[in-house]
Length: 124
Image (cartoon, rainbow, N blue to C red; front, side, top):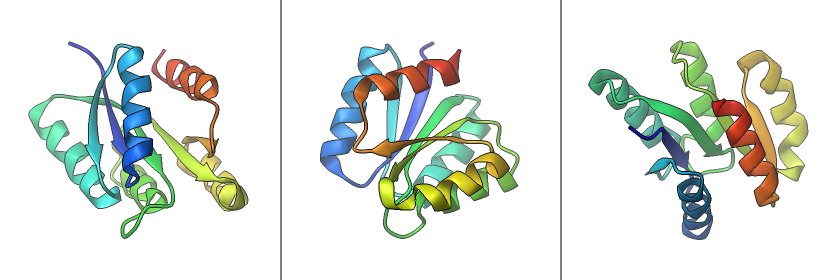
């Protein structure tokens, strides 16, 4: 069974790019429009025992954003690594939370090679 990567991203073009990258790496992808939908998918997958191996979430998505998602995952003691995609102007805010909530982040626009390296490091 392939590893599953959950992508929480509202931008259809970025979702398509992330899907292409993830498929190239040989992983399956599921998508959420926002953090709340992502959290519901994580909880549903946990009950079904189909485990999500990694979450990639944009920080700046409408509604229940990426930071809220990461905080809720941490609070719920869900053991799934997270890679946040962060706009340069939010790096200071996110880097403070990064150590406390134990997640990785990359800045956008991102280098595809950097993302691939972070995904591979996280899943190895």
